[in-house]
Length: 130
Image 1 (cartoon, rainbow, N blue to C red):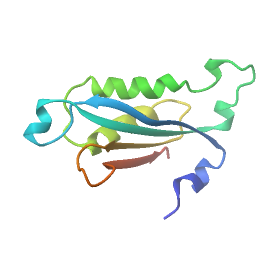
Image 2: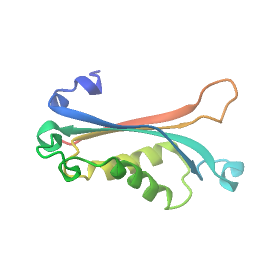
Image 3: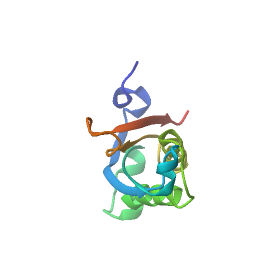
Image 4: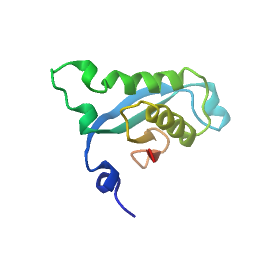
């Protein structure tokens, strides 16, 4: 399988990223998970063509603003309880891919507090526009 970073359609892209964005969210399928929020780490990679992300005048409107990633995640969280990390990843990825400058997105979520004997459990999804 071809690595995302070496995918031919991303060769002319810049990668914009959000690392370990810590959120408290109501997520999970178990009854105890439905009674409160859990800590979740969200990671996002956006792949944006250089032609769409190379500023000529050093102005914010010439690129994709980091706030776009945080706002997209916040909007999904505000919709209420989510059962599965897969759903959260898919929903966030789909919304980010709607941005006209974004060619591809990779989203991962991780629950770092589920098991005491590992760093975390999580899910990752990758979407590339056709």
